[in-house]
Image 1 (cartoon, one colour):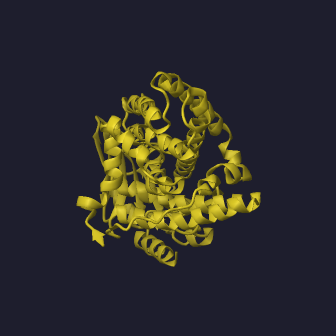
Image 2 (cartoon, one colour):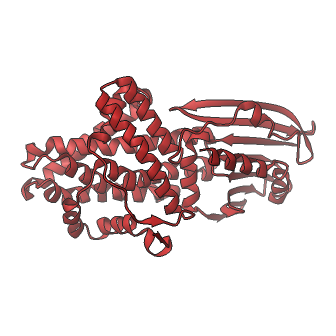
Image 3 (cartoon, one colour):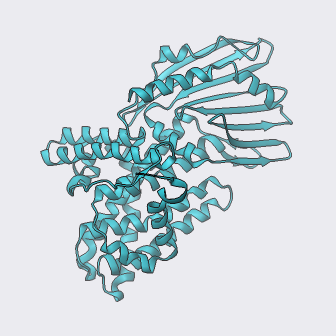
Length: 431
């Protein structure tokens, strides 16, 4: 059965988010009575909402940028931005799981009932307010305060939920909440310091996300979304992730740390790559062939191409300079995000738009021809930057001193974007 996602397909996750945020006192009893597993909680809820802070960070850091008074707008490179986004995503997935363990471990201390599944549900749904509010980090000024407000509301949700899910006495709810919050903050700080060294090792495979397989999975929902809709794509994503989670179960029961670490890496690749098998970024030689010899009437004077890997995810990048030898130049960067294209796809589904006018120019983010476009123009300097995200994995950025943004758009036409689209489609079909 196919359901129109505009009317009914998004009901489950959207109605749950709305209910836990708007009517938590009546929603917590509903949550406590539900029968589910940790794996199902993650694949149907956490992996979707956890992408919000990661995608928002990437958009803010690498696409929109941070405005520094009297200095202009600062952006980190696409590769750095994606690495940061991946780290935030991993931290969120692992962090929620650890919070659930903390809630369960502390239960007897506060007269509550130990129940790991109820503790996991408590952690997941209390986190909802922060995850949703994290989208506001894209906004300048008050964005950070709105995110903080979301985190504080999450503490309130936790306070309301503990007496219901964990059967904590009413007079112990406040200290129970306070201790969980303090423990969580300490754990997340430590995770932030060491996750880079642990994420590929056996510790996470053995005792972290690998433990998500501790409960058997239940059948996926019979409801089918339109496969061409965002939620339809997410449903396909989740079904592929389910296969990865089963391998985690098998590795966990085997007791082999190496197998657990490998299974975790495969699952992480499925999450970040959009639910499919691991995606290999295009080879440097192939990427070099996509860099034109001339651009905007200028000859190419310099080029460098490389492929790097972080957390098992590959990213390829080509940088080229075009110049006429008399001071006029353009800088081109083509990036294939490869194994993290799942995050890029979620950024596309977010459908972010921006139109900011200033006394010196403008900044715009919009969609055109199924691509994400980002323009930055400084009229006083006659300097512009144009970024094009295509096929949910290739980022083409062109920057330089030109008469107008139209001139920059014309110059970027020298890059064969259609070839990038075909390459992306071919690799997607191969998966």
